Image (cartoon, rainbow, N blue to C red; front, side, top):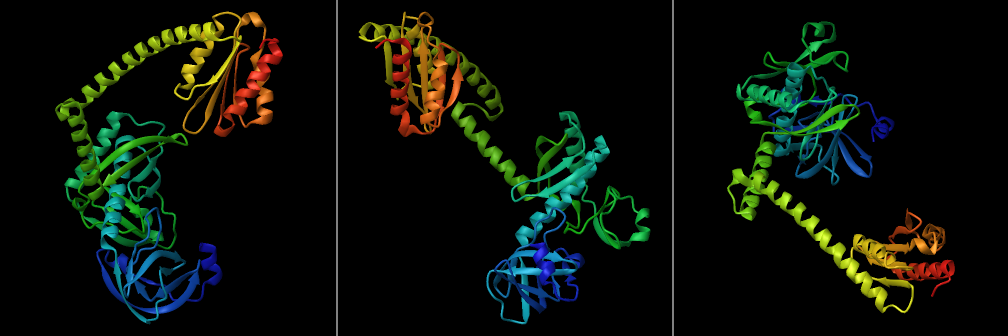
Length: 410
């Protein structure tokens, strides 16, 4: 998209960036100084704008120009391009930004500056990247690991800065004087550099939109860590997002408390106890199923006129037909071909008694030549899986024929 802009770029005057003058400006008037079509969308260039273009990890603003939706905002050079849902015929416009979205971005972005500086002060962890997402944001911190204790200290310091309601100032500094500013990171741009200062706490070179005071952020809450490229990436929420996160978790805990018929403070212990009981029940169930499988196998052998026992068992799990196959071949000189189903695939078991000297692994190549199937196993038992459920009967027939040919039994 940017290369397209450069190809089509005309000698437009630099756009006056009203969001630098006042991040709280919701409405403005401007003149249209250019029109283009980019990516099949009508685009207008204004002499001045309050719309923030996507930059520095912060998404673009949305809003309206004369009641037409602004669906994207991008910058090329010093010119800002407004992508519209429809053609804009007027030469003078009334602009209105989506304030809910803008203020949300201000809370997240200012919160990120505070969180990044808190990571640096507590653990000397530098921020390597920042992404402001639609639900939560992330910072990648240049540390191999961060303990729970350190993370708690970071979060407490960050929120101490929020609750102190410090002033957040923005100002421009010439490149030759920027060394006098204690920036957290060296600036990526040259020339006139915009500094965002959180009163005597953090100094960052940044072109984003920010709150005027830290108290407007409300709360900073780190959600979860994730290992990435030898570093740690943290997701976090600020402001109204933190409030929604708390509300979602409150509802979840209330629902769990209702399910367990317990107090909210007892939910964790109830869940732990339930999981322990479930594991115990599963062990007991497995033992019972193994015993039932033994008796089922013995009955099948007694009733079968053939030494080759096969069938489709839609009600059984792959694990159950595996046990059944093993129990069958332990009954004597028996061969087994058994099929079960899962939602998106079928499961095939081939088993052979040691006494028959049939290596069931030799059937794999035969089956693969006819069906998209995969798996493996030992000389006496293989497990195969295929997503071609409509070929389950064919697979079973191929398996039966293989067992007959190799064993000489019927």
